[in-house]
Image 1 (tube, rainbow, N blue to C red):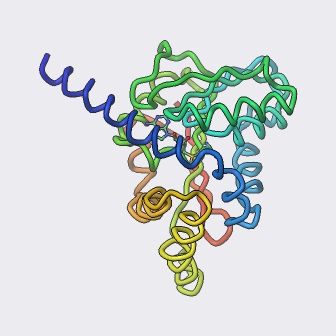
Image 2 (cartoon, rainbow, N blue to C red):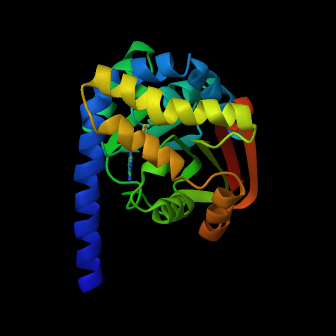
Length: 246
Ligand SMILES: C[S@@+](CC[C@H](N)C(=O)[O-])C[C@H]1O[C@@H](n2cnc3c(N)ncnc32)[C@H](O)[C@@H]1O
């Protein structure tokens, strides 16, 4: 009983903290993302979505869950590659989702996307209710990543696909040096300048550095129950797409 109470309190605190952080940077998130990545982030999302067989094969009426939907860039890419799909998005930031809703409407996809406020670690969906589950640049922000991965496994139907896109660490020493410089100095400086939030982009820097990537992350997917796990690095290993099945 006590541990359930503790969990509720923990999730309540997480909602406040992460939700508020992303609420504060929501207005500048898209612009800074595209500027600071020189628009490569769009290509990463396109490639990541292209790895999903049912999306690629234009299978009709598939039901997708986009965890940490944020401003809906991944959802829009999913719908561009499969116009028959329906997407449910969940996120802890209402401001990020408000921007996402506007963008989805501009693309004419409003009737295909549902936005839910909530935590990836305790999702309000029945077991096995989605054909595909995705998450782009979300998992490293989860207060408890393994709980989030277990929830993704629970709501995915047997045989369904999971796709996770996240930052990783380049292996080439020169690229690694540039990457460190970028994440330690350039991103927090420019981010804090434009978003007028001193803490938010420094936090993003720390969250990228502390995140297990490559085989270490595959181990977490395995522990959650996923099989057929495959990691593909993008642009010198700056990002990695993880594909897995239930
Ligand atoms: C870096 S943004 C990524 C947004 C979007 N997926 C994209 O590709 O641009 C991270 C998002 O994760 C959300 N988030 C962080 N922790 C979460 C959690 N435990 N449950 C749901 N959403 C969460 C944040 O509110 C934020 O919108």
